[in-house]
Each structure stands twice: as C-alpha cells, then as structure tokens.
Length: 347
Image (cartoon, rainbow, N blue to C red; front, side):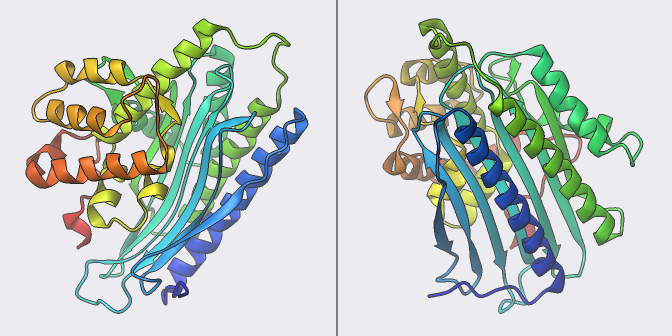
C-alpha cells in the first residue's frame, strides 16, 4: 500500500514546504546531539490514512537517548480528492515536539499547516512555543526575538501572534501558561499563497535554527540535580495536562480518525507524575474533571508513569470516549481571539 498524493497543486507545494522544514529540523537536531558527543539518528515511521487512499505521512523520531527523552518531527498530508461532498479538500502539516533528556535544555513545539477547503479557500496555521522545565530569561528573549525578526515585514504581526499564543497556551485550571514564549497564527491568509507560505517558512526556519543553537550550547559538567529533574517531571505532567484537556489540534486529530494515534500523541513526554496529574482533577471544570480521571486511569500504575506506545493509545481512546459522551465539552478547549476550526467544520 502506498500513499496517494493530493491532486491539488497548492497541497503538493505545501507538502514540499513542510517536508523541507522537517528535514532541516531533523538535521539540526542530529547535529546538536553530535556536537555533545551523543550522536542520535532519527528514524522514519510511515502511517497511511485509509490505506493511503487519503494520504498519510512520515514522522522522524527518537526517544530516551542521552540527548532526547522524546522527539517527533511529523509531516502529514491528508486529502479527500475522491470525496467531493466533504468541506475539507486537503491539509498538509508539520507538527514537531522535542523534549530533551536534560532538564536544563528547553522543550519546543512547532507547527505549520496549510488547509485547503473544497470551495477553493485556504489558510495557514503557524505555531511555535518554547517550553522549558527551568525557565531562562535569555532563552526566552532569544526565542521571541527570532520570531519578531522573522515577521518584521508585516508590522504588528508578531504582537498579534504572541497575544494569540499567550491566550491559547494558558491553562486556567492551573493558573499558568504551558510555556514562556508563544506564537500562534490561526486561519492566516492575506490572499497571496506565495506570501503566506514564505512567512510560514521564515517563522519555522528561524525557530528551528535558534532552537538547535540553544541545544548546541555546552552544559555545566555536573549532572542535573534531583531538584531539577523533579521540576522537569512536574513540567512534563503540566504539558500532558494541557495537550490532552485543552489542545484543539490534538483533540480534533483524535476525533477524526484513529489511524495515527502514536503520531498525534507524539508530543507527550516519556514520563509524567501520575499522582500530581490526579490531584488536578479537582481543579478542572466539569466534565473535564472526569477526563482527567480517565487519563490517570490510562497511565501505568507506577509513579513516575511511563508514556509508551500502548499508553499513548490508551490515552487517545480516553480522550475520544470522553468527547463522544460530552461533545459540548469541546467548547472548553483553548482558543485565541480566533477559534480554530472544529471537527465538524472539516466534514
């Protein structure tokens, strides 16, 4: 079985763009690991949507190495060329997450996607956020500066995207943000595909290069302390909580199909604090408190809990089951000023 490529010229161009970004990021991460004498080779894993008839994708990943606890650089292209009744024609996306092994190195999330609707309209979604376990002001300023420079040709765009990101990545139940620097453009279009694609590319390239430079810096010779590793575990638990209770992109992907659960859940860290997560059920609004308890039940009964492939599938099923019982709870998920399209918008 092979992936059938999309017929749309724009979908093909968008796929070429995100695949180029994917390879740039993988090469940068491998170079950063090699610079510390801890070489890592990312391996590709292919997945198919409806046996390839509606596309699919390839994710390059690694996990639990001396450099990376978890890393997933995923590209997917889904299309419905044989289903003209669907509103969604195609979607081409890069979704990436890196969780370094050492808590003194920050995690990162990147996303760039082009969505093409059946009526010929289309838009970009561009995201980047820096997620350290141990916040560092210099790293935050460098990350924000790279984003500001990449969008300098469009006055006010950085400020708009940063404000959208701050809203989207806020966790009301915990009274905190997921990360320290956020950039989020939703449904972005100026009417020029070329200009919008160039902007998406500039943003992602700037962040990829800046992040890989942060990873390449030497750390103190002393190993991370127990307190630093405890902070990392708590932060990774926060990350899982945000992704599985608030993130619309993750939920939408899980609700649309179950053919790439491991890829969609690739953003999850390798280990989380099960007891800490359980304590947050009381803080979540109804019925999300029920979802948190289901997530806890899906984790191994150890602490810390390891989030392996089987656990990812169990967590994905818990999310799907919850929203099938409580579809109105989708309205409790994160949004900026612009609300991201829902599953129903794309049917």
